[in-house]
Amino acid sequence: MAAVTVPEPRVQTRKVILLTPRGFCAGVVRAIDVVKIALGLYGAPIYVRKEIVHNRHVVEELREMGAVFVEELSEVPTGGRVIFSAHGVAPSVRQDAEARGLRVIDATCPLVTKVHLEAVRFARKGYTILLIGHQEHDEVVGTMGEAPESTIVVSSEDEAETTQVSNPDKVCFLTQTTLSLDETAGIVERLKRRFPKIQGPPAQDICYATENRQMAVKAVANHCQLLLVVGSQNSSNSRRMVEVCQNQGTPAYLVDDESDVRQEWLNGVETVVVTAGASAPEHLVEQLVEALRNRWGFTEMEEMQIKDEDVRFSLPPELSQASRLTQIAL
Image 1 (cartoon, rainbow, N blue to C red):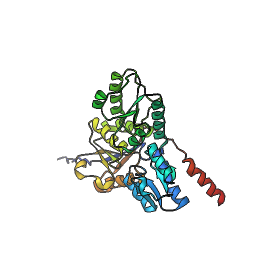
Image 2 (cartoon, helix red, strand yellow; image 1 turned 30 degrees about the vertical axis):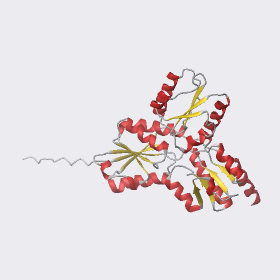
Image 3 (cartoon, rainbow, N blue to C red; image 1 turned 90 degrees about the horizontal axis):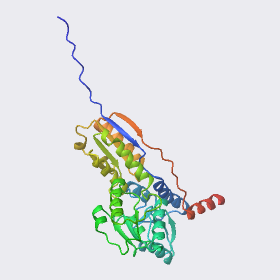
Image 4 (cartoon, rainbow, N blue to C red; image 1 turned 135 degrees about the vertical axis):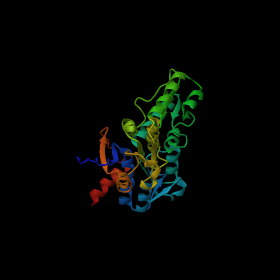
């Protein structure tokens, strides 16, 4: 009787797809560098108004180095040195800093500054500014402060349908830089239908990094069973990445680090995509991938690059000049 060959049982291979681009954008790199360089030049304490970027781990690391994070300038001693966060501030904050003799280093992302300048330009021409964004977000608060009497925040398509303006012939829209591309497009479409003469910015306000990360998520959402986005809960761009994936019908979760991952998310999952918001450090991504490998058996890894990024921003002039003088003195 011939021997019967029993097939080997199929071994399930669990796979991680690591998305690129991910993690720090140029504005975040610049903001973190500003704090570290300032601490190196002037020593602690260096005060930072609000979180320099929206990531708990980054803030804790800088706090350990000597940065003191405050909510308002009133917490900074008169004559102290203070850094404005990447999200920007209203002119009233700058005026307050000057009145109290504070030595300011401005780490506002240049792409946020672009939106501020657009708001000023439109306000001077007598336009009502419809600012698309989240009402309490630091960036929106700062941008609105450029022209508070002329600005109305629009947070949803429903609000776009009900917002009233004094002169429909002189209305414009601007956007927070970290929004969902699809959601913003829907709001803009409704505003254009209601206000046919509405004007927009010369170039899209949503930043390159936000767009690239969302497009990367869209590219893989239908080829995986789960997406994990590394980022803090108050990170707008990170939350939008989760929403983009969920809107494609694939489960997605925002995690501060590997300790947030739940076993039930991974049950029955063979392919998980890992990426990170624009303010999340790469070492948190590495720790998550390591945990997926060692704790949950995701032994295969593939890196998928959707787009190259080579954007760099120069340091604020007040800091770059001080750095040069220090080098000359040495």
